[in-house]
Image 1 (cartoon, rainbow, N blue to C red):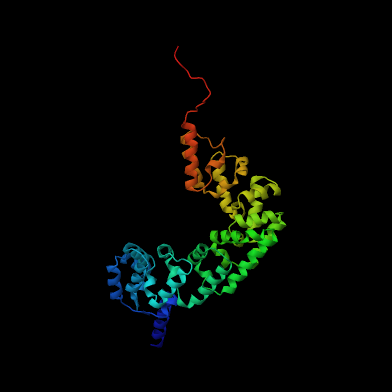
Image 2 (image 1 turned 120 degrees about the vertical axis):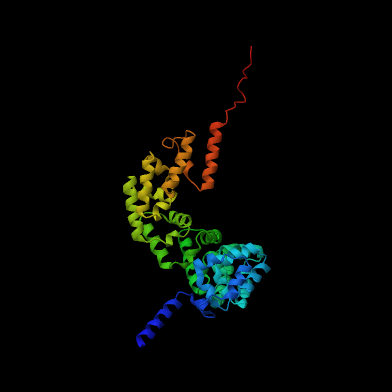
Length: 375
C-alpha cells in the first residue's frame, strides 16, 4: 500500500513540473477543464482546439482571468481577432493576475507610449509581456539603465520583446556585458563619438549578445588577433558579425579557418580578406561550408568566382540553385557572369533580377545616331 501511495505521489510530482513555476504560484490544476475558461475563450472566438493541442493544461487552471486579459488588450486598441490570436498562441496569458497585467502595461508604455505599437509587439511576443510579477523590479532597473545610456526607446523595446531574459535578471549582469563591449570598442580604436550608435546597432541586430559571458568575447578577440587581424579589422568584424563573435569559440573557429583555407587554396592574408567580406565563413561550421561549396561547384561555378564574391556562401544550396534556374531562363550564364546577382535577401534578389532583365529587354537608344529614313 505504501508503495502504491509513493508511486502515486511521484506521478503527481512529474505532472506538476510540466507547469511553469511562475504560473503555478497562484493557480491550481484541476482534473477537469475549467468550464468558465472554455466558455470565455469560445465567446472570444479563440481556437480552442489549438489550445488543447498545444497547451491543454491551461484550460485546467483555476483561477483564470480570461475576460480581464481581453478587456485590457481591447482597451489598448486590439481588435477581437487580434485578441483571439494572442490567446490562441499564448493562452498562459489568462493566468496572469489583473494587477500584474496593469503593472506590465505601465512598464512597457514607459518605453513604448503608443498603444497601437504596443499591441503589435504583444501579438508578436506575448510571452515577453505576460511574464512573472517577480521580475518587475529587475525590468524597471534595466529600463532605467539602458535609458541612462541614451539608447533609443525603440531599441529598448526591441530588447525587451525579443530577449526578455536580459530584462528579467539583475541589472548588474547587463552592465558588465555592456561595459565589456564598450571597452572592446575603445581598445580596437572605435571613436567615442560613434560608440552609442555602434552599441545601438549591435544590440538591435543581436539582442541575445547581452546573455553571453564577457570572457567569451575577450577570448575570441584574442584568438582572432593572433590569427593576424588588425585592431581595425577586429572592430569591423565585431560590428559585421552582429554579436555572433560571442557565440563562437577558438576551437570551432580554428577548425573552420583551416577547412576554408584548404578548400579555397588561399593564403592566410587572402582568407582574412574573404572573412572580412563574408563573416559567415568564420561562424558557419565546416560541415555547412562543405555542403555549400559542393553545391556551388556542382552548378559550374569556379572557386575563383566564390573567392571574389564570398557572400554567396551565406545562401543555402537550395536558394542558390533556384536563383540560378531563374537567371538561366533569360539566358544569364552564372558561370561567366558575376555571382553578385545571386546575393542578398529574397527582395534584394528580385530587384537585381528585375534590373538585369530590364537591361536585357530594353532596346538601346543612341540619341546622336542618325535616323534611318526611306529614300
